[in-house]
Length: 373
Image (cartoon, rainbow, N blue to C red; front, side):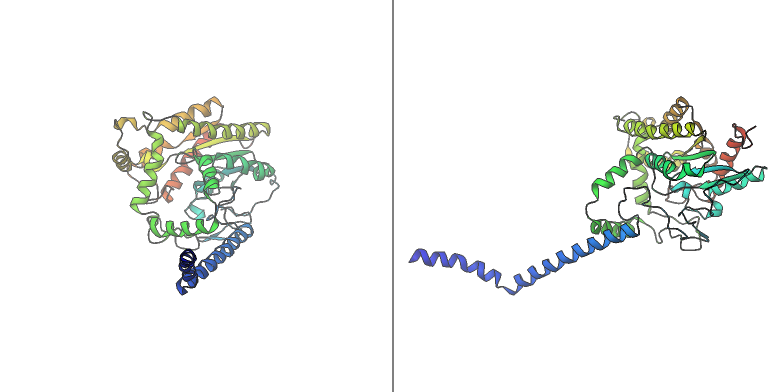
């Protein structure tokens, strides 16, 4: 009898919990939250499939691609989502067609008329050439995506030349970062919340908004803390004394894609020129000092800000690929002129203008022969 009472007394607390109004409310709330999460997740996935957005990972190179005919300051993207005027697939008679392939540098955060690819076309034609430069820049790309873009969309345009912009700041590691993004993203809902948090905590007053028709060349993009943290992390590639070989692995991965691009261009009789774009910490002495203070290398000379450029130049020469390294000229001009947007890794108007001037000069003096003579 006592044992039965004991068993009943042990069951009573469970019944009491189940019948408790607070428990019922909590369980119902959890069920509703679960259903809401699943519906939200399904909605995000369907939306992303129909209308891809950078917030969610995309296996293709189109994650950050512009929407066809979208407004970009006072300019409208073309029907391909590129920051350029419309072009025909068939190359016009007598035109020397050049493809500008790159990431957000090629796409540009400045208005279309200030973009260095736009300026290159204008400057070459002012020299009596008959040039068409097609800007195929898509933000967020890396070497593997450059290769895919050339194969999928570039070759059909029958180009005479490919001008590929290689950004020192992240093009060595973009293939790795892309695979990392693919592994990290499990739920679209979580990615959306993370994106909101990032926008609220890392960016200054107004985020880059191409729908705003007024471009502000001196307005910072990131907060001081976020930008310095970003630059410091990327600057570990310059510490050659403690380099454990990881960067060299990234380097070889990127070079495999560049070599494949070279092979494809050679097979189609297409000229290839690589534009080596420096990151701001390579040309800005003040920013270099801040990075050295943060990384605190045993020997400040151990941070060699020319190191990746030397590796890249040597390998491009080995592959017989023509290149132009903008580092020295940007370093010199940066002593008196700001060439990057504040707290932003991208060129401002002056940076784009200098790049266009240097690249145009290089093209006109290095076997650039549109007439085939």
